[in-house]
Image 1 (cartoon, one colour):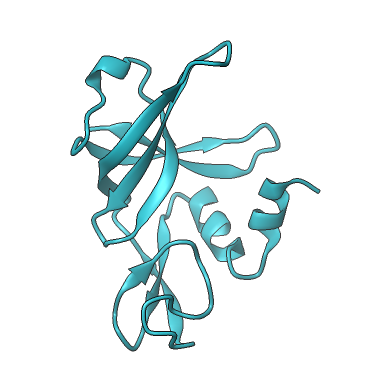
Image 2 (image 1 turned 180 degrees about the horizontal axis):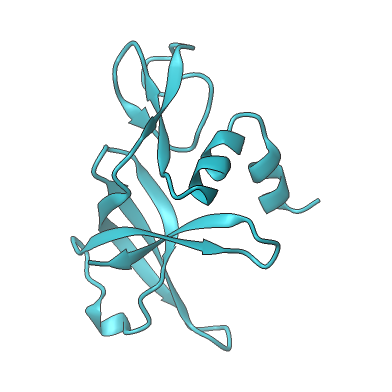
Length: 126
């Protein structure tokens, strides 16, 4: 079993991948401090409250940092994206014109499927 299988089938993250396959982007929110967090987990990493829930998110954010991996046949850009809801997540940008990518650049969710059909959250410039 590889890492993607573990993430997709783990009880704490499975609702995320199920919703992503339906075109919805969910984030975990804490009912006590009302903050969103990423990665999905049952206990809030901000206040340690066990009362968390899934909420639909905008799927929009801005680039906090990025880099291009050029050591592979098809170079690609990875980035930390700070979502409009607060959390920062690592992702791959689907932009291939690397000259357009900039810190602070606005991005939107771009769901792509892995070879096994698993939906994955990528982002594209807006």
